[in-house]
Image 1: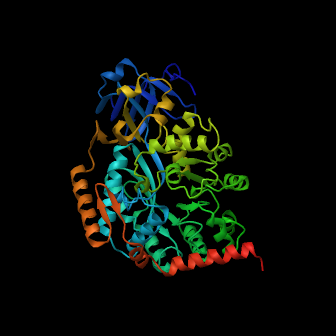
Image 2: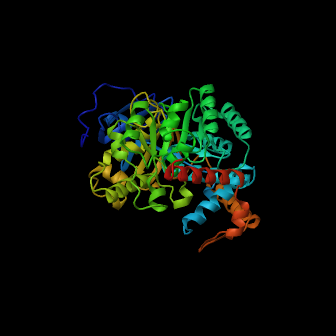
Image 3: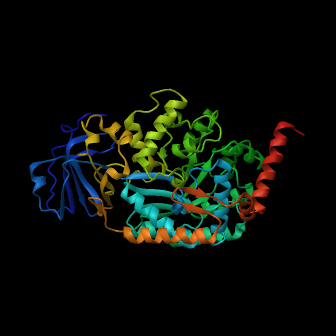
Amino acid sequence: MTPDAAELGDNTEVAVNDADLVVHDAVVVTVDEDNRIYRNGTVVVEDGVLTDVRTTRDGDRDCDADRVIDGEGTLVMPGLVNAHTHLELTPLIGAFSDLDLLEMMSGMTAIFGHIADGEYGYLTDAGYELAALNFLAGGVTTVNSMDVRPSGGAETFGEAGLRGFFGMALSDLFWDVPVDKQFERAREFIDEYHGAYDGRIRATINPHDDWSCTRALWERTAALADEYPDLLVHTHLLELEASNTMARSNGAEDSLDLLDDIGLLDDRLVAAHFRLANNEDIQRTADANASVAHCPSIFAYWNTDGDVQWTPVPELRDASVDVGLGIDDHYWHDSYSLFGEARQARLAANLKRSTGQYHSMELVRMLTIEGAAALGIDDEVGSLEPGKCADVIMLDIEKPKFIPMTNIPAQIVNNAVPADVKTVIVDGDVLMRDGDVKTMDADAVREQVESAVERFESETDWELGVGGSVPPSKLNVAHDLPKRGPSQLLGRLAFQSAKDQFPF
């Protein structure tokens, strides 16, 4: 990485007078192949595409472009890519924070069971609005979300001008919705929303995970993927000890063997978490050109076993596996900050292993270009280079905390927070300027969310107050939980565990 790329910009004269947008005199972090940083740089946009990124010239300041932004005191970088998330329960942020793991998991599963049955639409609609508003304001321009009823997310993020991958979670051992109905809904969603909003919204295929799906569901997923060869397959993989146990119950040696056997271990696979991967798993993933989304905060917050290894991200990256960062269920750990995931990735890895697991620029790349690569769109977004879509964010670095502005990559991943983002541009359109969101009505979103939470509280046994939350009684939660799927899941895992321990 060059500490100052001012001398490295080419001297080719590029006309800026006819441009749609010019930002000049900013610190520009390109995240290009050479990780070039311009201390005093210019970004030129025309027809939604970056046409020039270079050192600022005198003519840039008084050019006749449609919109000219003085970037002094700002840092310009690519929009952030949230490579794995869930959005529907966003209004319940804070509700799970102080519960124990079993309370959180059972309460969440019960709520999702109702959503799968078509209930709580008012809550999920408000959740998409609130998530879009907060991610937009925090510099996240692309999300990859797995949800139960994703159409609201596709429409909300599309209307807000953001970029998003959305898909419907599929599982036959998690909730009781008939599998035929799940796949019918998934196909309808794909046909309606893939490529919508000028291509900014894309559909994905989402088998929920490798511990709550039977082989029959995986085989139906592979058949659906064959129908739609340009769609990503997004799943949770090697997340829990139960992952490989269920794979053995499904007639495979392990999870990757199952995916390979049915034809899903390939360059379309985006695997969230990958915590329990061993060296062989890493190599097989690299050979398949599959990708990984690392979500450090969720497991730092809800760690089930301190002795379990940490996600082997350095080894994955050394094997040339594309690894992006994801927030996962932000309402489980009360943070919309993707910048915070970069910091958490470093802290957790250093604590679990030893210091020096990442260079700061590696983490910047995971926030941007490597997240884009994990989603197969690094030729479109993720870095500031001519020919790419103009997905750009501007941070206010005149704040005292950024003084002195040395080691800029470290400042981004260790010090920056969503509140530092002042301007957001997607496809050349300014979605937020100086902290003012242009494509959403923040007051209307606030009112919608507050109304939804009040209604949810009145319709359920949840108590949601300023001092914390009180979940329903265990008896009421047990009554609300899906019955058929989870009982089969637990039964299969118990039987396979006994079989592993006592072969017969």
